[in-house]
Image (cartoon, rainbow, N blue to C red; front, side, top):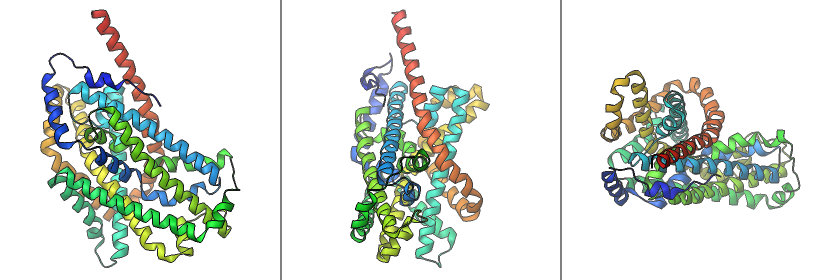
Length: 417
């Protein structure tokens, strides 16, 4: 995990940038909240895919799968910290309160490659929003079979849109914390249920271990997807505090909660599989319900809370990324207007924030309602492989390029002096 010198980003100012400091201070007084950032991380990092993770770890066993989960978590958190360092550097350099992956990619990878990466990032983020809307709509339809599918898909996204667009962030944070509480209570109930019916088998399962790469590697992409929250990292840097130190603490604390949840759930399900003599787990949820059907409300509660908190995290962070991506594409086709558009970027996003928020929530409702079958395969590919590449490999590359640029600037300044 590479660690930069964040004090440079906090103290270094270019000549003539005094007004920026005042603007940043006004934001800090009104919107900074360390624990709001932590709860947003916890909610976004934990997805309902966590419940299906044991299907990919059953071949390796308890110890190898735990090692793979821990290594995947370290890999994810390291790349997220790099994104946080890049975000704070860009905010200080440009004198703005929020950046996006689009801005980070274009400033480090160059205009052409950065535009391509920005579009792919935006497509992946949008696919994650569609997945959340589809999952919540499915749960609502299961609870209320007579409800129209479009209405079932629209209920929570519309609630989230009203909350984000028309209420202060404290209200969004309160709703997110309540959902995180429901998620923690639900997963605790599921783990307690599994342990209570399979204590002896849990101990026996520790004796089986397969360290073959073919048994361990399939679980890594799923774990990276389950524990990752790269999409919201720039927004986290906006609200977490005044320095990258605050961001690191929030990332480590918020990321540790999903790690413990994943490890405990994986251990319980592998123990139950050992008790039943199952070499493979077709559906971990069905396995748990087969030994205790009363766990169904906890399963539904966890799935709903995990999807709802993830949707909130994406909905508060993606509009800025979408605005920057559209602006970057327009600049590529209208170079003469680039400087004017760039100077008005922050104010334009502020005026259109409500429209963008509703756009990124309403469009997925119609996609899920009318085109869900055609979208599923592309979503599976984007969710696993593209997520591992874009959020695991590119952040270190971008950080290396950024630091190379910083060294060149410092050498240039030293030679001019």
